Figure 1 (cartoon, rainbow, N blue to C red):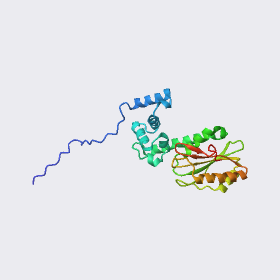
Figure 2 (cartoon, one colour):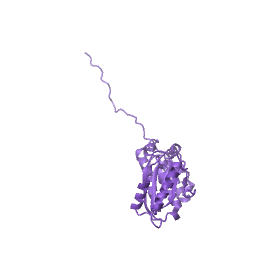
Figure 3 (tube, rainbow, N blue to C red):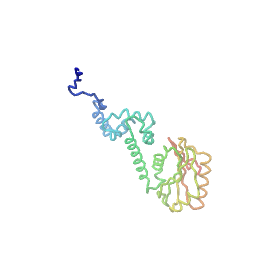
Figure 4 (cartoon, helix red, strand yellow):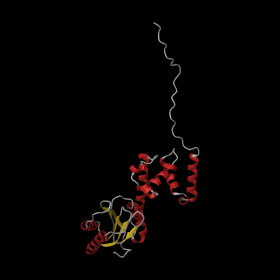
Length: 246
């Protein structure tokens, strides 16, 4: 019987694998030019997406970050919205991933900590714009209502900054006994009350007005001054003091 011919395995078989995505030809040059513009002309010379690009350079070293920055702004709206977005939503953007999403959240945490440091130990009423900036930075993008209290000493310097209660999307329970008990424990002489409206509209509800009046009355009986109650919205704030409601 004649043997069947054997296949010729000859030389090695070449397999074509997909090549990794290459960076644009002028990738490094673009980064250098953007850094130079930031250095020479300052951040105001750059568009929001370009500032975000600069930040992403640190986290994504070998990919064009311009389309990623633009995709983030398209999805979330503003730079502030991007930096305050939940990590799991950030990670849904092509090119971000879990690690870069975490990096962006760390940037936000550092920014908030810096705001807090800027008001600690300072006389609150003469640094009011800094206080409002801080409250907006830490509360404007929260998805649930928070009731925060700034406890002040006799010189109106910050003793403590505490979130007293966390509620739902449109309500936070506030208990005068707990508020005043904590104020007495800290030997606070004055308070600034702050809460946020996740809806974005800082206008007070009837419940907000009634609750504020109750707290002011109870505090006054204990010799504690409530300087203001501020409601933080996405794009602004409402001051009970400024509107003569305290």
